[in-house]
Image (cartoon, rainbow, N blue to C red; front, side, top):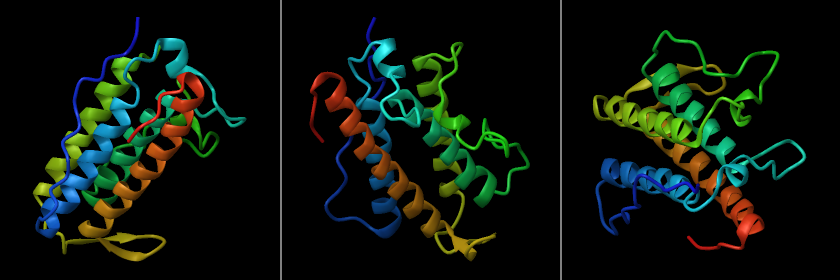
Length: 170
């Protein structure tokens, strides 16, 4: 059975205010990530494509953790443990375990994205939080950073998808 993406991409507006442009750009790349899985079977979704074990589904799991880390833990200061990653296993968020399913990983990612949207909507772009490497970051920086990371991993997804079945595209 092949995976069917539970959403479609919505094009970003060509003209928009800062908040709308940041949110639409991030949502576009979030949807791009999930739609890149469309039509792949379970073996293809889990296929390790690099020596470090990167897989298409592993990228989604990783970005689920990115959403949690940057919006919930770092920005909203939620008192919750980081998912999967430990000091002993810094790459656990890229690895798909035997009991994890594509539907479960994608549903978790989409729920994390919705949570991130709610956190962002409740704050000003100028609201800041402490950050151990940068001193302070504002919501604008968090939105841009997660957009950048999601877009970068979409490039990885493009390469993996082409290697799996030759599918290319935006």
